[in-house]
Length: 92
Image 1 (cartoon, rainbow, N blue to C red):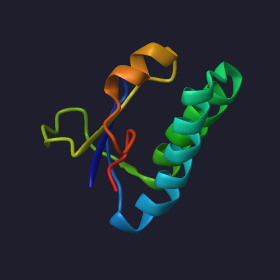
Image 2: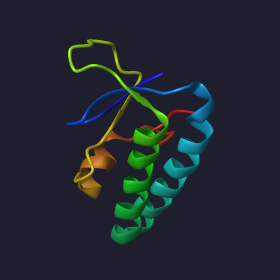
Image 3: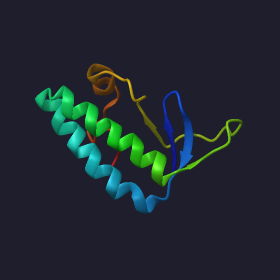
Image 4: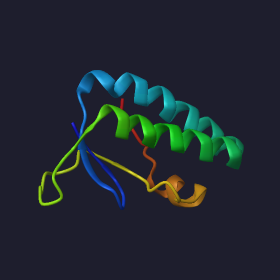
């Protein structure tokens, strides 16, 4: 799976890591629904850190379609809310 973090580029991530990311995504959704800005910041940081840790960066000149697009680390709660689907940021 190709994942893009806005403003940072793309990473290739094994499908076996999606469950770990979904757990963080569920937590992020809960924090957004409750308006927990501090929790939102912490969990968004953890989600992006997991993608960076688990994924392999693609070269800057690679033009692969991204299967998943995640917000930048400084995205606001409202910006992330606008990116959400019914499943959150990560489908499944």
